[in-house]
Amino acid sequence: MKFMHIPLTTFASLSLALTLASGTSAQVNHDAMTDHAVEPTGQFQRIEQPLWSRAAVTGAGLSLIGLELWWFLLSKPKSRTATTTGGVQEVAVTVDGGYDPSHIVVQAGQPVRLNFYRKDPSSCLEEVRFPDFRIAQALPMNQTTAIEFTPTQPGRYEFACGMNMFRGTVEVVAEDGDAVPPVATTTAEPTDHQHHPSGVPTAVPVPSSETGEATLTPEGIQTAMVTAAKGYQPNRIIVEAGRPVRLDFRRDTPSSCYAQLLIPEFGIAVDLPEGKTIPVEFTPTQPGEYEFMCGMKMNFGTIEVRSGVGFLNGKTPVHASA
Image 1 (tube, one colour):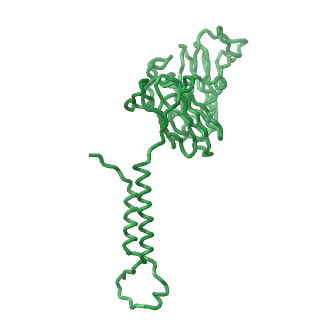
Image 2 (tube, rainbow, N blue to C red; image 1 turned 135 degrees about the horizontal axis):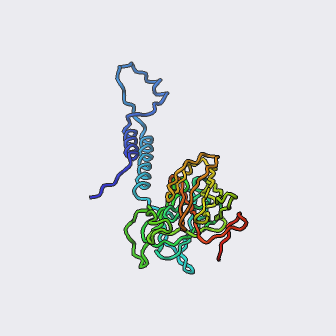
Image 3 (cartoon, one colour; image 1 turned 120 degrees about the horizontal axis):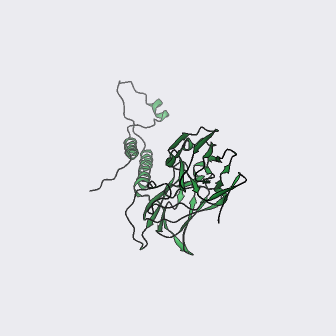
């Protein structure tokens, strides 16, 4: 037998309504008291409440209880199944006091495009994050922002606002359309320093505007500046294997999420005070992709280490081949 957990506020509302309806407390008509003065007896006297007042109080209490029961027991997140156009599964999501729909159903193995239209000016909703797909995307006001990824494994994957207050779910079903049991949303750690295992969802290709290439100092150190604010800018940095690297991280946001920087593959964990630039140094020896992230593991970036990269005049890295 299943038991439903009803909030304590519901019981409180019910008790209040019954108490007021029973007439144990009521307003006293001033004129009646002056016309019928009584001698004090040292005991409390019951004062009858008008019938219409008791009915109104009882009705208000029952309405409040009904609203609470609907909110906690009957209301469900709005769900929508993606429609496929040109081989891409698409859903429009309105960002206004939350996400509508907040439950999206897609198929595994097919590209997904979620078009977020933000109408709510709340700063909490100015960014949306998909931790399992390594996505953190700003949502400008009154604009449609497309977020694309390809889920490879069935399961349920959460997305949330920048403050993790509003949430939604992308339910990925098998290619035959059958739903599968929920899976843990925590992404497995890479099995090596180059690639994620095939079972882990891959990130969306990073636009070129968010990619930065390190520059080479006269001392032979590859350097790049990274700003931590609404995500990391740039969030992909290209360096060459075998050369020392210095990344200067500057935190320009009071968000505590960015108070710490982690680069697990290089054993780096440093504090980032707000408004200060902190250098992080290491030497990558193997080509591959290495993640860096905030202390809460909600915002991610990538250090792309390449081999066969030459430097032109000791300043800008140039790929040896296309």
